[in-house]
Length: 312
Image 1: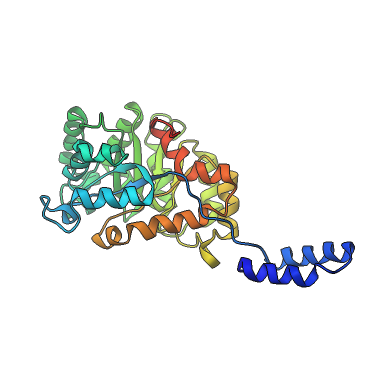
Image 2 (image 1 turned 90 degrees about the vertical axis):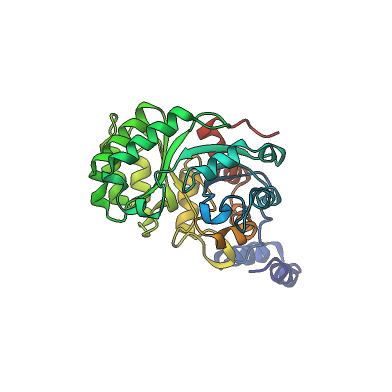
């Protein structure tokens, strides 16, 4: 219920005796009569950002660096996980003085895709593994690469591909974070390939299962793998009325307040065109969480994962 309506209802019951007021208050709460919380106003860590070729296109595309940095700054985004097709997009953002001037910290990941064709066969393509090693050796102007991905597995069985196996081993051995767009079955398969069987691996689960894994299944995977982090863009069933978290998801975030992050997933240019509104949407439902939990999901969890300097 809108806060103005709530006030009107309270004004009608206020003249009642104290006992009646208490009963009325309980009834109002039971039926969801509650004021809207204020939007979250703190910093945001965009843990799933692409600066793909079609966005910048040799700096002549519709979203040159100045445009995307202005959108981040206007949205209060102070750090990003940059993973782009090809990696030149991330390298560009990492190397620009304008990025630092905008107050944005770039956490660079090695993307596995040189082009769109790589989406469907990377898990068995040894040249992808070679490319990843080359990029890791090169590093970026913002420092060493901190992770691998985002990668996609449209068939969870491909998590057993030879390159997928090698990359999961490499990630754990090099203390790299993996960003994976996969279903819940593939999470188990990927974790099984790590030396620790998933107990030391750090994996950001893009969309926390875009196929819509039930909350109970997400809960079970969170309990099984201590380094599993859920990223919440495009997550089916996340928000309900008034752009607030649905009850089951709210309960899950409260249960694992250090295990979720937000992201824009600017995989197509339309996402850049609506970047500010995407971030504002997060601010709305973050505002409905306890302040300390909102800050963790919005900023602290991402910053802590990569050692980004805390904001004052």
